[in-house]
Every structure is written in C-alpha cells, then in structure tokens.
Amino acid sequence: MRDLDLTSLRLFVTVCETGNIARAGEKASIVGSAISKRLAQLEDTVGTPLLVRKRHGVMPTAAGQTLLEHARSILDSTARIERDMHGYAAGVRGQVRILASVSAMSESLADDVAAFLQMPGNGNIQVDMEERVSPDIVRGVRDGTASVGVCWDAADLGPLQSRAYRSDHLCIVVPSGHPLSARKSLRFADTLDFEHVSLPVNSAVQVMLRREAAQLGRTLTHRVIVSNFEAALRVVRAGLAISLVPREVAGGFAQAYGLKIIPLQEPWAERRFIICFRDEQGLPPAAQLLVEHLAAHHHP
Image (cartoon, rainbow, N blue to C red):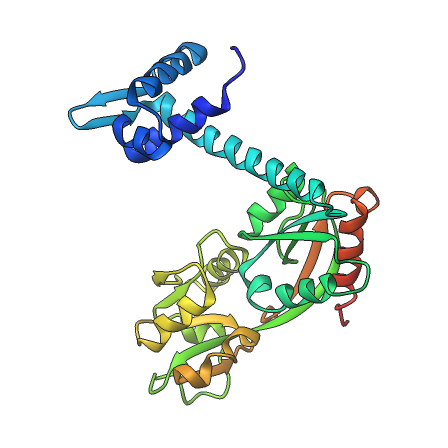
C-alpha cells in the first residue's frame, strides 16, 4: 500500500464527521468535487471502498470505520509533533507529556507541576497534561505517547518503573438527610444498598470496587456515570445517588453543596499514587527533573 496522504485523511475524517461531502467542503474551504477526487484516490490507495452513499449524504463502511479510528490517531499524533516542534522553534528547552488519573489531576498534580514550572531554571520547560483512566495511562507510557504517567499504585504497570508520589483517602459523600448521613464512619458493604454515581467503569477504582462488591456477594449499582468528581458531587447534591470520592476533593465542595463526608473504614481507603515511566535513566532531562520534583512530595 502506498503512503497515506495526511490531507486526504483529514478530509476523510471531516466527511465522516459531517456525513456530507458538501458540508465537509464548506468546513474545509474546498469544493466538493476536489474532496470526492481525494476520497477516490484514498480508496484506491487502501484498495477497498471507504464510504457508502446514502440519500442525504455518506457514511463509512466497516473498512471506513476502521480507517476513521486510525486516521484520528494519526492526525492527533501529527498535531502533537507540530506542537512539540513549534515549542522547540520558539525556544522551549524541554517538553514533558504527562498522562494522569482524574484523582491526581483533581487533587494536587496541577499545583505541583505549576510549582515546578515556577522554579528558577524551569521557565523554558513545557508540560502537557492529559487526563486518562489508569489502564490507558499505563498503555500510553508503555507505547511512548507520554514520558510520564501518574496513577493509583493498584494499576498493573507491567514492565514500567515507578516512584512513589502522594496519597489520598476515599470517603462516602451523601446528600443531607440521606439515611447514611448520621453515620460517623462506614464500611463499603454499608453503601451497596444505595445507587452510586461513579467515574468511567474501566477506571482503576471502579474495577476495584466491583471486585470488592463481588467478594461480598453483592453488586455495585451505578445510577449515573460521569467523567469528573465535580459532576459526581453535583449528582449527589441533586439527591440522585451517593458517591465514593477522595476526601481531598470532596472537602472543597461539601459545604457549598450541603453534603456530608463520611470516612470509609476499609484498608484500601487510603490510596497511594505513583509516577510511572519506561526507564528513569532514559528519560529526557526535563522529564527527569519533573519526576524528581513530584517524587519529593511523597511522605511515607
């Protein structure tokens, strides 16, 4: 197969997203006939039809859907290359990309990175942070998408190396007047009679909670799944469900939202976070400096 053309891939993605060649042309400021020609060349390159013409537009074939996923990944990687090279052209001395869990991002990581960038000598370092669930963090660091990951130490790191970072404390948050609101502490089993609002089901903490519930012969019931802790606490405030979140996050919202924070009496309620990477000695200098700075916040 001949080399794929980035412009054609970009137009193919736009066509798939708009479902219409004419609208894609308007969005890309290119006439529809030129897009059609490029798409025909793209189909010839890959050797299979990519689009099915419908009455009011087009939709990808099975092969087209597969190419769409790859094309988005390729274009995302290309954008990162352009951004990184632009940074060096602008005089950036080093760049570090971090993949981090929602807990780390919501708690202290942003402040720790900001403090690092404000230190003398680090003004020309650029740090990019992206939120991912733990399995995707490990995969991204392993595959080279990022130099550094920050996640819960319960994640399966495989061949990755790690350094200790901070810790947090999981608790139960309920709305005022809830049947559990008068309790001074709770076991996880006490919460399973109630519907939960949770983060994505493939996040490390949700995998662990499902396992813990199964060991109790129970099922963890999700009423709502959200992408961040603030959204979870808004759902709790609305009285729709309870949530298990870090005390370090809940404390900032509890009073404003009228919520009750109840300690969780489980050995796994205190979570330890780690900084992971493929090879500490092989990290670029800027990444090594950042890892050392973050690891200094570990308190045994």
